Length: 502
Image (cartoon, rainbow, N blue to C red; front, side, top):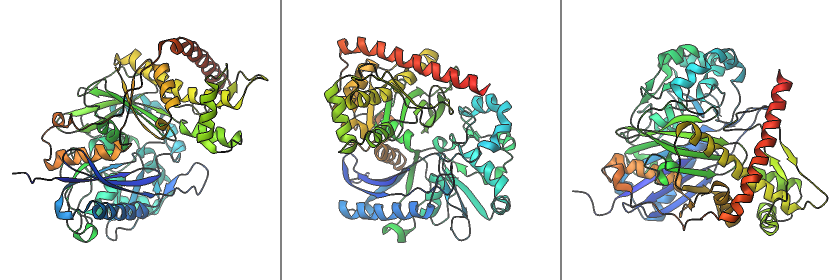
Protein backbone atom coordinates (compact mmCIF):
# COMPACT_ATOMS: atom_id res chain seq x y z
CA UNK A 1 0.00 0.00 0.00
CA UNK A 2 1.36 3.40 -0.98
CA UNK A 3 1.76 6.10 1.70
CA UNK A 4 -0.82 8.93 1.56
CA UNK A 5 1.82 11.51 0.61
CA UNK A 6 4.78 10.74 -1.61
CA UNK A 7 7.62 13.23 -1.95
CA UNK A 8 10.26 13.23 -4.65
CA UNK A 9 13.49 15.23 -4.53
CA UNK A 10 15.10 16.29 -7.81
CA UNK A 11 18.42 17.89 -8.71
CA UNK A 12 19.11 19.97 -11.83
CA UNK A 13 22.90 20.31 -12.06
CA UNK A 14 23.24 22.77 -14.93
CA UNK A 15 26.15 24.72 -16.34
CA UNK A 16 25.53 27.96 -14.45
CA UNK A 17 23.68 26.81 -11.35
CA UNK A 18 22.41 23.94 -9.23
CA UNK A 19 18.66 23.76 -8.61
CA UNK A 20 16.86 21.34 -6.29
CA UNK A 21 13.08 20.92 -6.02
CA UNK A 22 10.71 18.77 -3.99
CA UNK A 23 7.40 17.71 -5.55
CA UNK A 24 4.48 15.62 -4.36
CA UNK A 25 2.59 12.83 -6.12
CA UNK A 26 0.29 15.41 -7.77
CA UNK A 27 3.23 17.16 -9.42
CA UNK A 28 3.00 20.16 -7.11
CA UNK A 29 6.33 21.88 -6.37
CA UNK A 30 6.64 22.13 -2.59
CA UNK A 31 9.97 23.94 -2.34
CA UNK A 32 12.99 24.82 -4.44
CA UNK A 33 16.47 26.21 -3.88
CA UNK A 34 19.30 27.30 -6.14
CA UNK A 35 23.07 27.76 -5.94
CA UNK A 36 25.35 29.44 -8.52
CA UNK A 37 28.19 27.48 -10.12
CA UNK A 38 31.33 29.23 -11.33
CA UNK A 39 33.09 28.48 -14.61
CA UNK A 40 36.84 28.82 -15.16
CA UNK A 41 38.90 29.29 -18.34
CA UNK A 42 42.58 28.61 -17.68
CA UNK A 43 43.41 28.93 -21.39
CA UNK A 44 41.53 30.06 -24.53
CA UNK A 45 39.05 27.37 -25.54
CA UNK A 46 39.14 25.69 -22.14
CA UNK A 47 36.01 25.62 -19.96
CA UNK A 48 36.29 24.04 -16.50
CA UNK A 49 34.32 23.71 -13.27
CA UNK A 50 35.02 22.44 -9.77
CA UNK A 51 33.42 18.98 -9.29
CA UNK A 52 33.46 19.40 -5.51
CA UNK A 53 31.54 22.68 -5.85
CA UNK A 54 28.88 20.80 -7.83
CA UNK A 55 28.59 18.19 -5.09
CA UNK A 56 28.53 20.77 -2.28
CA UNK A 57 25.82 22.70 -4.13
CA UNK A 58 23.68 19.57 -4.48
CA UNK A 59 23.96 18.63 -0.81
CA UNK A 60 23.44 22.21 0.40
CA UNK A 61 20.45 22.95 -1.81
CA UNK A 62 18.87 19.55 -1.11
CA UNK A 63 19.05 20.07 2.64
CA UNK A 64 17.58 23.56 2.24
CA UNK A 65 14.66 22.18 0.21
CA UNK A 66 13.97 19.42 2.73
CA UNK A 67 13.88 22.01 5.50
CA UNK A 68 11.67 24.44 3.53
CA UNK A 69 9.21 21.68 2.63
CA UNK A 70 9.15 20.30 6.17
CA UNK A 71 10.16 16.90 4.86
CA UNK A 72 12.50 14.30 6.38
CA UNK A 73 14.70 11.99 4.33
CA UNK A 74 12.50 9.09 5.45
CA UNK A 75 9.52 10.78 3.72
CA UNK A 76 11.27 10.93 0.32
CA UNK A 77 10.28 8.17 -2.10
CA UNK A 78 13.14 8.81 -4.49
CA UNK A 79 15.81 11.23 -5.69
CA UNK A 80 16.24 12.18 -9.35
CA UNK A 81 19.18 13.90 -11.02
CA UNK A 82 19.30 15.85 -14.26
CA UNK A 83 22.66 17.18 -15.37
CA UNK A 84 24.61 19.05 -18.00
CA UNK A 85 25.63 16.38 -20.50
CA UNK A 86 29.01 15.72 -22.19
CA UNK A 87 30.96 17.28 -19.28
CA UNK A 88 33.47 14.81 -17.81
CA UNK A 89 34.91 14.30 -14.34
CA UNK A 90 37.91 12.15 -13.34
CA UNK A 91 38.44 11.29 -9.69
CA UNK A 92 40.41 9.08 -7.30
CA UNK A 93 38.38 5.98 -6.49
CA UNK A 94 40.05 5.66 -3.06
CA UNK A 95 39.76 9.24 -1.78
CA UNK A 96 36.88 10.62 -3.85
CA UNK A 97 38.99 13.66 -4.74
CA UNK A 98 38.85 14.99 -8.33
CA UNK A 99 42.07 14.47 -10.27
CA UNK A 100 41.48 17.70 -12.21
CA UNK A 101 38.70 20.23 -12.84
CA UNK A 102 35.68 19.00 -14.78
CA UNK A 103 36.01 19.49 -18.54
CA UNK A 104 32.72 21.23 -19.38
CA UNK A 105 30.75 20.44 -22.54
CA UNK A 106 31.69 23.83 -24.05
CA UNK A 107 35.41 23.04 -23.71
CA UNK A 108 37.03 22.70 -27.16
CA UNK A 109 40.02 20.66 -26.00
CA UNK A 110 40.17 17.53 -28.05
CA UNK A 111 39.60 19.20 -31.44
CA UNK A 112 43.17 18.50 -32.58
CA UNK A 113 43.13 14.96 -31.18
CA UNK A 114 40.00 13.92 -33.09
CA UNK A 115 40.81 15.75 -36.35
CA UNK A 116 42.75 12.72 -37.73
CA UNK A 117 39.58 10.62 -37.23
CA UNK A 118 37.57 12.58 -39.83
CA UNK A 119 37.51 9.53 -42.10
CA UNK A 120 35.47 7.71 -39.45
CA UNK A 121 32.90 10.50 -39.01
CA UNK A 122 30.17 8.62 -40.89
CA UNK A 123 30.64 5.54 -38.71
CA UNK A 124 30.53 7.66 -35.55
CA UNK A 125 27.35 9.40 -36.70
CA UNK A 126 25.67 6.13 -37.74
CA UNK A 127 26.26 4.52 -34.34
CA UNK A 128 25.98 7.47 -31.96
CA UNK A 129 23.81 9.98 -33.83
CA UNK A 130 26.49 12.59 -33.12
CA UNK A 131 28.82 14.56 -35.33
CA UNK A 132 32.54 14.10 -34.67
CA UNK A 133 33.01 17.14 -32.46
CA UNK A 134 35.03 18.08 -29.33
CA UNK A 135 31.79 18.90 -27.49
CA UNK A 136 31.29 15.22 -26.76
CA UNK A 137 32.98 13.28 -23.97
CA UNK A 138 35.13 10.93 -26.06
CA UNK A 139 37.09 13.86 -27.50
CA UNK A 140 37.80 15.19 -24.00
CA UNK A 141 38.94 11.76 -22.80
CA UNK A 142 41.18 11.40 -25.84
CA UNK A 143 42.78 14.75 -25.00
CA UNK A 144 43.45 13.53 -21.45
CA UNK A 145 45.09 10.33 -22.64
CA UNK A 146 47.26 12.32 -25.06
CA UNK A 147 48.23 15.17 -22.74
CA UNK A 148 47.95 14.02 -19.11
CA UNK A 149 49.98 10.79 -18.79
CA UNK A 150 49.50 10.55 -15.01
CA UNK A 151 45.72 10.63 -15.45
CA UNK A 152 45.88 8.17 -18.36
CA UNK A 153 47.91 5.80 -16.19
CA UNK A 154 45.49 6.14 -13.27
CA UNK A 155 42.51 5.37 -15.49
CA UNK A 156 44.21 2.35 -17.08
CA UNK A 157 45.22 0.96 -13.70
CA UNK A 158 41.79 1.56 -12.17
CA UNK A 159 42.93 3.99 -9.49
CA UNK A 160 41.02 6.80 -11.18
CA UNK A 161 37.40 6.72 -12.33
CA UNK A 162 35.73 8.54 -15.22
CA UNK A 163 32.15 9.68 -15.56
CA UNK A 164 29.77 12.30 -16.80
CA UNK A 165 28.24 14.58 -14.17
CA UNK A 166 25.47 12.12 -13.29
CA UNK A 167 28.04 9.40 -12.64
CA UNK A 168 30.15 11.70 -10.46
CA UNK A 169 27.23 12.91 -8.35
CA UNK A 170 25.83 9.42 -7.81
CA UNK A 171 29.26 8.10 -6.84
CA UNK A 172 29.69 10.90 -4.28
CA UNK A 173 26.14 10.72 -2.95
CA UNK A 174 26.35 6.95 -2.46
CA UNK A 175 29.74 7.12 -0.76
CA UNK A 176 31.48 5.46 -3.68
CA UNK A 177 29.22 2.42 -3.97
CA UNK A 178 27.77 3.13 -7.45
CA UNK A 179 29.69 3.85 -10.69
CA UNK A 180 26.71 4.14 -13.02
CA UNK A 181 25.02 6.15 -15.76
CA UNK A 182 21.88 5.89 -17.94
CA UNK A 183 21.32 5.78 -21.73
CA UNK A 184 20.51 9.48 -22.24
CA UNK A 185 23.79 10.60 -20.68
CA UNK A 186 25.74 7.72 -22.23
CA UNK A 187 24.44 8.68 -25.68
CA UNK A 188 26.29 12.02 -25.40
CA UNK A 189 29.72 10.49 -24.85
CA UNK A 190 30.27 9.47 -28.52
CA UNK A 191 31.05 5.98 -27.18
CA UNK A 192 27.53 4.51 -27.01
CA UNK A 193 25.60 2.75 -29.78
CA UNK A 194 22.13 4.27 -29.49
CA UNK A 195 20.46 1.57 -31.59
CA UNK A 196 21.93 -1.37 -29.61
CA UNK A 197 21.62 0.60 -26.34
CA UNK A 198 25.13 -0.45 -25.34
CA UNK A 199 28.69 0.79 -25.05
CA UNK A 200 30.51 0.22 -28.34
CA UNK A 201 33.90 -1.50 -28.23
CA UNK A 202 34.74 -0.30 -31.76
CA UNK A 203 34.30 3.31 -30.69
CA UNK A 204 36.53 2.81 -27.65
CA UNK A 205 39.15 1.38 -30.04
CA UNK A 206 38.72 4.28 -32.47
CA UNK A 207 39.38 6.84 -29.73
CA UNK A 208 42.11 4.62 -28.21
CA UNK A 209 40.39 4.43 -24.83
CA UNK A 210 40.34 1.44 -22.46
CA UNK A 211 36.89 -0.09 -22.09
CA UNK A 212 37.45 -0.49 -18.35
CA UNK A 213 36.80 3.23 -17.78
CA UNK A 214 33.12 3.05 -18.67
CA UNK A 215 30.47 3.06 -15.93
CA UNK A 216 27.63 0.57 -15.83
CA UNK A 217 24.66 1.79 -17.89
CA UNK A 218 21.20 1.18 -16.39
CA UNK A 219 17.68 2.24 -17.41
CA UNK A 220 16.85 5.88 -16.67
CA UNK A 221 14.43 4.84 -13.90
CA UNK A 222 16.56 2.07 -12.42
CA UNK A 223 17.84 1.87 -8.88
CA UNK A 224 21.20 3.67 -8.65
CA UNK A 225 21.93 3.21 -4.96
CA UNK A 226 21.18 5.09 -1.73
CA UNK A 227 22.55 8.38 -0.46
CA UNK A 228 24.92 8.26 2.49
CA UNK A 229 22.72 8.86 5.57
CA UNK A 230 24.98 11.63 6.87
CA UNK A 231 24.44 13.81 3.77
CA UNK A 232 20.68 14.40 3.82
CA UNK A 233 19.62 13.21 7.25
CA UNK A 234 18.97 9.65 6.13
CA UNK A 235 19.37 7.28 3.20
CA UNK A 236 17.35 8.24 0.10
CA UNK A 237 17.02 5.94 -2.92
CA UNK A 238 18.35 7.42 -6.17
CA UNK A 239 15.73 6.25 -8.66
CA UNK A 240 16.11 8.44 -11.74
CA UNK A 241 18.91 9.89 -13.88
CA UNK A 242 18.59 12.06 -17.00
CA UNK A 243 20.47 14.59 -19.09
CA UNK A 244 19.19 18.13 -18.55
CA UNK A 245 17.65 18.67 -22.00
CA UNK A 246 16.15 15.18 -21.87
CA UNK A 247 14.62 16.00 -18.50
CA UNK A 248 13.19 19.22 -19.92
CA UNK A 249 11.55 17.24 -22.75
CA UNK A 250 9.92 14.96 -20.18
CA UNK A 251 9.10 17.85 -17.85
CA UNK A 252 7.15 19.55 -20.63
CA UNK A 253 5.10 16.39 -21.18
CA UNK A 254 6.54 15.57 -24.61
CA UNK A 255 5.69 11.89 -24.23
CA UNK A 256 4.56 11.16 -27.78
CA UNK A 257 6.25 11.25 -31.16
CA UNK A 258 6.37 14.77 -32.73
CA UNK A 259 5.85 16.54 -29.38
CA UNK A 260 8.59 19.13 -29.01
CA UNK A 261 10.07 21.78 -26.75
CA UNK A 262 12.57 24.63 -26.91
CA UNK A 263 14.61 25.89 -23.97
CA UNK A 264 15.84 29.46 -24.50
CA UNK A 265 18.87 30.34 -22.43
CA UNK A 266 22.30 31.61 -23.39
CA UNK A 267 21.85 29.28 -26.35
CA UNK A 268 18.69 27.41 -27.31
CA UNK A 269 17.86 23.73 -27.67
CA UNK A 270 15.01 22.39 -29.79
CA UNK A 271 14.16 18.77 -28.97
CA UNK A 272 11.46 16.68 -30.64
CA UNK A 273 10.31 13.25 -29.46
CA UNK A 274 11.20 10.85 -32.30
CA UNK A 275 9.49 7.75 -30.91
CA UNK A 276 10.79 4.40 -29.73
CA UNK A 277 12.20 3.05 -33.02
CA UNK A 278 15.68 3.91 -34.36
CA UNK A 279 15.53 6.32 -37.32
CA UNK A 280 17.87 6.99 -40.20
CA UNK A 281 17.71 9.84 -42.72
CA UNK A 282 18.62 12.45 -40.11
CA UNK A 283 19.45 15.85 -41.64
CA UNK A 284 23.06 17.03 -41.44
CA UNK A 285 23.56 19.31 -38.48
CA UNK A 286 20.76 17.68 -36.46
CA UNK A 287 21.64 15.28 -33.66
CA UNK A 288 19.84 11.95 -33.26
CA UNK A 289 20.03 10.99 -29.62
CA UNK A 290 18.40 9.16 -26.73
CA UNK A 291 16.00 11.01 -24.48
CA UNK A 292 15.52 8.20 -21.96
CA UNK A 293 14.91 4.51 -21.52
CA UNK A 294 12.14 3.36 -19.19
CA UNK A 295 10.96 0.13 -20.76
CA UNK A 296 11.41 1.03 -24.41
CA UNK A 297 13.90 3.71 -25.40
CA UNK A 298 12.69 7.16 -26.42
CA UNK A 299 14.70 8.76 -29.23
CA UNK A 300 14.85 12.47 -30.00
CA UNK A 301 16.19 14.90 -32.56
CA UNK A 302 18.10 17.90 -31.24
CA UNK A 303 18.97 21.18 -32.87
CA UNK A 304 21.32 23.55 -31.04
CA UNK A 305 21.43 27.36 -31.34
CA UNK A 306 24.76 28.70 -30.06
CA UNK A 307 23.59 32.29 -29.57
CA UNK A 308 20.06 32.98 -28.28
CA UNK A 309 19.83 35.09 -25.11
CA UNK A 310 23.51 35.85 -25.54
CA UNK A 311 22.61 37.93 -28.63
CA UNK A 312 20.63 40.29 -26.42
CA UNK A 313 23.43 40.48 -23.85
CA UNK A 314 25.88 41.41 -26.62
CA UNK A 315 23.58 44.01 -28.21
CA UNK A 316 22.70 45.64 -24.88
CA UNK A 317 26.40 46.00 -24.10
CA UNK A 318 27.58 47.17 -27.52
CA UNK A 319 24.68 49.60 -27.97
CA UNK A 320 25.16 50.90 -24.39
CA UNK A 321 21.48 50.43 -23.58
CA UNK A 322 20.76 51.84 -20.14
CA UNK A 323 18.72 49.23 -18.32
CA UNK A 324 20.34 46.26 -20.05
CA UNK A 325 18.46 43.45 -21.76
CA UNK A 326 14.96 44.31 -20.42
CA UNK A 327 15.29 47.84 -21.80
CA UNK A 328 16.61 46.48 -25.11
CA UNK A 329 13.60 44.17 -25.47
CA UNK A 330 11.37 47.16 -24.71
CA UNK A 331 13.01 49.07 -27.57
CA UNK A 332 12.37 46.11 -29.90
CA UNK A 333 8.73 45.97 -28.85
CA UNK A 334 8.24 49.68 -29.46
CA UNK A 335 9.88 49.46 -32.88
CA UNK A 336 7.68 46.51 -33.85
CA UNK A 337 9.90 45.65 -36.83
CA UNK A 338 13.54 45.31 -37.83
CA UNK A 339 12.92 47.60 -40.83
CA UNK A 340 15.09 45.46 -43.10
CA UNK A 341 17.96 44.95 -40.63
CA UNK A 342 19.24 41.35 -40.56
CA UNK A 343 21.50 39.94 -37.85
CA UNK A 344 23.50 36.76 -38.45
CA UNK A 345 24.51 35.67 -34.91
CA UNK A 346 27.64 33.70 -35.82
CA UNK A 347 29.77 35.15 -33.01
CA UNK A 348 31.21 31.67 -32.41
CA UNK A 349 30.09 30.10 -35.67
CA UNK A 350 26.65 28.72 -36.49
CA UNK A 351 25.04 25.71 -34.83
CA UNK A 352 22.24 23.57 -36.22
CA UNK A 353 21.44 22.96 -39.00
CA UNK A 354 24.63 24.45 -40.52
CA UNK A 355 27.44 23.48 -38.08
CA UNK A 356 29.68 26.15 -39.60
CA UNK A 357 32.17 26.94 -36.80
CA UNK A 358 34.28 29.43 -38.79
CA UNK A 359 31.52 31.72 -40.10
CA UNK A 360 31.40 35.05 -38.29
CA UNK A 361 28.57 37.39 -37.33
CA UNK A 362 27.19 40.22 -39.43
CA UNK A 363 24.57 42.95 -39.18
CA UNK A 364 23.21 43.91 -42.59
CA UNK A 365 20.61 46.30 -43.98
CA UNK A 366 21.54 49.34 -41.87
CA UNK A 367 20.46 52.82 -42.96
CA UNK A 368 20.51 56.32 -41.47
CA UNK A 369 16.98 55.66 -40.23
CA UNK A 370 17.96 52.49 -38.34
CA UNK A 371 17.24 52.74 -34.62
CA UNK A 372 18.33 50.76 -31.60
CA UNK A 373 14.86 49.24 -31.61
CA UNK A 374 15.25 48.00 -35.19
CA UNK A 375 18.57 46.32 -34.36
CA UNK A 376 17.11 44.84 -31.17
CA UNK A 377 14.15 43.48 -33.14
CA UNK A 378 16.59 41.95 -35.64
CA UNK A 379 18.28 40.23 -32.68
CA UNK A 380 14.99 38.70 -31.54
CA UNK A 381 14.22 37.66 -35.12
CA UNK A 382 17.64 35.98 -35.39
CA UNK A 383 16.80 33.69 -32.45
CA UNK A 384 13.39 32.85 -33.92
CA UNK A 385 14.75 32.32 -37.43
CA UNK A 386 17.33 29.82 -36.14
CA UNK A 387 14.60 27.79 -34.43
CA UNK A 388 12.57 27.81 -37.66
CA UNK A 389 15.61 26.63 -39.65
CA UNK A 390 16.01 23.68 -37.28
CA UNK A 391 12.28 22.87 -37.34
CA UNK A 392 12.22 22.96 -41.15
CA UNK A 393 15.35 20.78 -41.46
CA UNK A 394 13.92 18.10 -39.17
CA UNK A 395 10.54 18.10 -40.92
CA UNK A 396 12.05 17.96 -44.43
CA UNK A 397 14.19 14.86 -43.82
CA UNK A 398 12.37 12.94 -41.10
CA UNK A 399 8.76 13.81 -41.84
CA UNK A 400 8.26 14.75 -38.18
CA UNK A 401 6.11 17.84 -37.96
CA UNK A 402 4.79 19.42 -34.79
CA UNK A 403 1.37 20.76 -33.85
CA UNK A 404 2.63 23.10 -31.13
CA UNK A 405 5.82 23.87 -29.27
CA UNK A 406 6.39 23.85 -25.50
CA UNK A 407 8.85 26.56 -24.40
CA UNK A 408 10.78 27.59 -21.30
CA UNK A 409 13.83 29.60 -20.35
CA UNK A 410 14.61 33.23 -19.62
CA UNK A 411 13.56 34.64 -22.99
CA UNK A 412 10.01 33.31 -22.55
CA UNK A 413 9.37 36.08 -20.02
CA UNK A 414 9.02 38.45 -23.00
CA UNK A 415 5.53 38.43 -24.53
CA UNK A 416 6.94 40.26 -27.56
CA UNK A 417 9.47 37.50 -28.18
CA UNK A 418 6.91 34.71 -27.74
CA UNK A 419 4.51 36.30 -30.21
CA UNK A 420 7.31 36.80 -32.73
CA UNK A 421 8.39 33.15 -32.43
CA UNK A 422 4.80 31.93 -32.84
CA UNK A 423 4.34 34.10 -35.94
CA UNK A 424 7.62 32.97 -37.53
CA UNK A 425 6.90 29.28 -36.92
CA UNK A 426 3.19 29.46 -37.62
CA UNK A 427 2.72 27.36 -34.48
CA UNK A 428 1.10 27.99 -31.10
CA UNK A 429 3.60 28.17 -28.24
CA UNK A 430 2.86 26.76 -24.78
CA UNK A 431 5.09 28.34 -22.10
CA UNK A 432 5.91 26.35 -18.99
CA UNK A 433 3.83 27.42 -15.99
CA UNK A 434 6.58 26.76 -13.44
CA UNK A 435 9.77 27.57 -15.33
CA UNK A 436 11.24 24.42 -13.77
CA UNK A 437 10.72 21.87 -16.54
CA UNK A 438 14.17 20.31 -16.12
CA UNK A 439 14.06 19.42 -12.39
CA UNK A 440 10.38 18.55 -12.82
CA UNK A 441 11.33 16.02 -15.50
CA UNK A 442 14.03 14.56 -13.26
CA UNK A 443 11.48 14.26 -10.46
CA UNK A 444 9.04 12.45 -12.73
CA UNK A 445 11.70 9.95 -13.78
CA UNK A 446 12.63 9.35 -10.14
CA UNK A 447 8.94 8.90 -9.31
CA UNK A 448 8.66 6.26 -12.02
CA UNK A 449 11.68 4.50 -10.55
CA UNK A 450 10.27 4.69 -7.03
CA UNK A 451 6.85 3.39 -8.03
CA UNK A 452 5.00 6.66 -7.35
CA UNK A 453 3.65 6.31 -10.89
CA UNK A 454 3.44 3.01 -12.71
CA UNK A 455 4.03 4.19 -16.27
CA UNK A 456 4.69 7.23 -18.45
CA UNK A 457 0.97 7.27 -19.33
CA UNK A 458 0.12 8.01 -15.69
CA UNK A 459 2.03 11.31 -15.92
CA UNK A 460 -0.30 12.89 -18.48
CA UNK A 461 -2.32 14.94 -15.98
CA UNK A 462 0.68 16.49 -14.22
CA UNK A 463 1.94 18.95 -16.85
CA UNK A 464 1.03 22.62 -16.56
CA UNK A 465 1.51 25.34 -19.18
CA UNK A 466 0.37 28.92 -19.48
CA UNK A 467 -2.17 29.96 -22.11
CA UNK A 468 -1.01 29.23 -25.66
CA UNK A 469 0.43 32.05 -27.79
CA UNK A 470 -1.28 31.70 -31.18
CA UNK A 471 0.38 32.79 -34.45
CA UNK A 472 -1.13 35.77 -36.25
CA UNK A 473 -1.75 35.38 -39.99
CA UNK A 474 -0.99 38.88 -41.30
CA UNK A 475 2.44 39.40 -39.69
CA UNK A 476 3.46 35.89 -40.71
CA UNK A 477 3.32 36.69 -44.44
CA UNK A 478 5.82 39.55 -43.98
CA UNK A 479 8.00 37.48 -41.66
CA UNK A 480 8.17 34.64 -44.21
CA UNK A 481 9.85 37.05 -46.63
CA UNK A 482 12.15 38.34 -43.88
CA UNK A 483 13.11 34.75 -43.08
CA UNK A 484 13.97 34.02 -46.72
CA UNK A 485 16.13 37.16 -46.85
CA UNK A 486 17.91 36.13 -43.65
CA UNK A 487 18.54 32.60 -45.00
CA UNK A 488 19.97 34.15 -48.16
CA UNK A 489 22.50 36.14 -46.12
CA UNK A 490 23.40 33.00 -44.14
CA UNK A 491 23.97 31.06 -47.37
CA UNK A 492 26.24 33.81 -48.71
CA UNK A 493 28.33 33.88 -45.53
CA UNK A 494 28.63 30.08 -45.33
CA UNK A 495 29.61 29.86 -49.01
CA UNK A 496 32.14 32.67 -48.60
CA UNK A 497 33.78 30.93 -45.65
CA UNK A 498 33.93 27.68 -47.65
CA UNK A 499 35.72 29.49 -50.48
CA UNK A 500 38.23 31.04 -48.07
CA UNK A 501 38.94 27.64 -46.52
CA UNK A 502 39.48 25.89 -49.86
